[in-house]
Every structure is written in C-alpha cells, then in structure tokens.
Image (cartoon, rainbow, N blue to C red; front, side):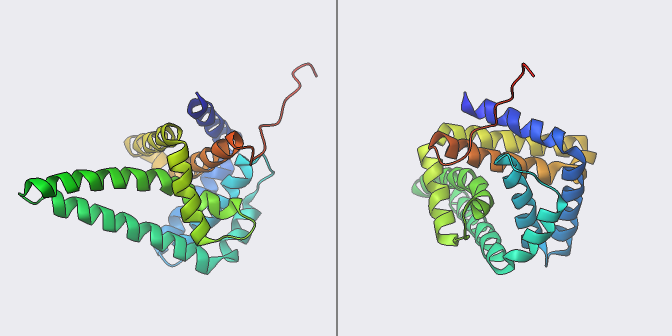
Length: 211
C-alpha cells in the first residue's frame, strides 16, 4: 500500500540527515517557545522537509532563508489552522456536553469534521512550498481536495504522524530532539506521495544497484 511505502521513505529521510533534523527541531522548539517566530520557523522547517521529499539537496541554509521569506503569509496560515482547530474543538465540547439527543448527533458530526481537518492540515504547510508562489486560498482548497480524493491514504499517514508524536512523548528525549522534524518530514512525503499518484511530483530516483 502506498501509505506504508511513504512511511518508509519518511523514516529513511530522517535517518539519512539525522543531525540536520535534530538541529532544525531544536530551532523549531526555540521559535515556538518564543511565540513571535513560531510561524516562520514552522515554514522554514517545512521548506527543508519539502526539498527532501522532492529529492533535492537540503541544508540548514534553506531553513534560515525560507523562515524570513514569507513571514506574513506563514503567520496567516499558521493562525488560520489554529483558529479552525479551536473552533471545531469548541463545537465538539459544546454539543457533546448538551443533554439534548440532537446535540449529541451534531457533536459526533463535528468529531468527523475534526478528523477531516486534521487530515487536510497535514497538507497545509507542505503545499505552501510546493507552489511557486504561496496562495493561502489555494493551499486550503487543495488540502481538502487531496484529503477527499485520497481519504484512506491521508488517514493512514495522519495516524502515522500521531504515532510518531506518541512515541516521542513516551520516550521523553526525542520529543525535544526529533519530534517536530519527524512529523514535518512525514507530512511533506505525504503530500509528494499523493502528487506522485497524480503525476505532479517527481518519482524517487532510481538507484542502479549493479554499479
């Protein structure tokens, strides 16, 4: 199945550039804790991961350059994502805490909306860099379209990223060292894997094992 193949590619990419991803993850944590650079460092980490997912050379310079490139747009996408998640979670809490039977049904519907949002959300920042010029409208539109077009694949990759998060929390140290990069790399390989099915992204380079 395509999802498991993409999971393997993600793990291999993490292993091949392990020290780079640890360093970029540390920068992500610093930027997130400081709040103000949270969105730019998220964009920078995704740029590095997007290059790897598209089989391009990567180093920390791409992170620094891209973090400064679209500060306004990165904050807009970052903020919209947080607002949508907060809004959906609030609705789930509100309706499921009601005693009315109809409200319980509406609450369950909102749970499915949350699942769809989480599925689409893994495409948001990867699409940011997959475009020649980032368009927030196109990012949101294409993210939801990809989730609907490849629901099982997208759902499995979302579960894989949740599993990476859980493993990082359980093992304590990797949550600081590698968790951000592992999820971001996986998200970008998820996007590229879907685009490969549509003929819109490069296939993995073929290695001649005879040489």
